[in-house]
Image 1: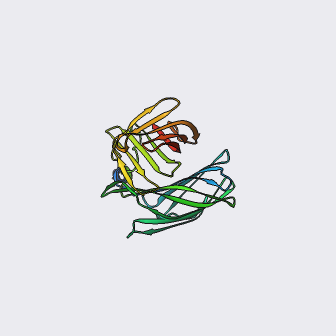
Image 2: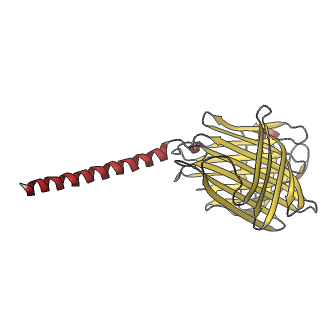
Length: 310
């Protein structure tokens, strides 16, 4: 009789262990599925600057602050890239924090962003150190010039203005673009893993400080949020006129990129000189120079390009 009871108890415990393990595995699977499919907030503040120092040396600066929610915290990714005096510097800081607010940590030494929601404008003050070089940037006022995309889960706006600052105590100044994304669902803002896509994003200023941006993406239909699109932006430095364009013709060869904008009186941008910057695998990023021809005249133009192919 005792052996029977021991056998029954042993069998009961084994089945109990199996049940507990099954419940645990189901819980882990449920958390994983919840993590994959539940909308998670995503935020991006990107500042792209192009200017000169007092001696006329060209400087190009890009600062990105990405915050992406995990189950509990936000993963923060801060990246700074600088091209100056024939050299390229790049540094990244990554950490987790309970808040999505941008905070000084790693390469970022200080950061302030003042928003005036009534006027749809903001100010930036930041300082960072990259490869031993100290940079301080002040952006007095930049407006939300273009609403690139807006729905109940995703807002992206782009503003263009001017900046001033220092690099290793040398004065610098020039043009700046602020690109801001606020999304309650990161899938609206990013490409899903494994999805095929290609495209190009180009930001340029001409000699008269007019701004041009071209953004083209071809995304496979199985992507969950981010969709294919094609648009261009234009802002006149003299009049402040802003236009969002839908039509463009792009011809790309191994040595040139020619963009025609029919809605802007067939303005033609010819980029012929490219210098690469660090980029992810299958992507190309760098600076480009060329000429722009419109109804006024022909003048120099320069800026940043990113080519995607995955």
